[in-house]
Image (cartoon, rainbow, N blue to C red; front, side, top):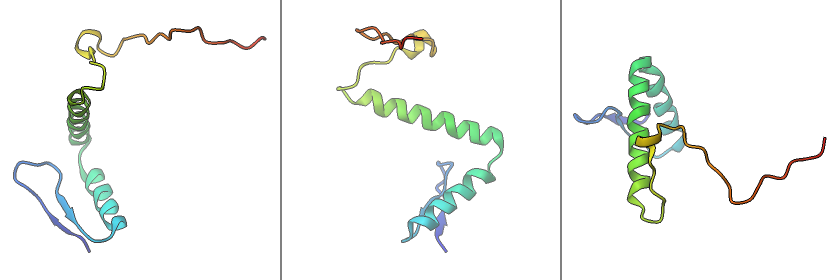
Length: 85
């Protein structure tokens, strides 16, 4: 049985175990025990963390998501070959 302790400032508890399967199962149980609103808040938090990690790497191109709100069209330098019908 994994040892679960929660921090005061964190939403997700810290899971301590020697077995990966137990940790994954405890994370799964925790996630599905949340309400849909809490799951949505957790997804937003994870998305923000991922964007911060991406932005911290200078090798990555900057994202202008605040300007485009996800409506950016990606274009390639070469046309996409189409098959004959």
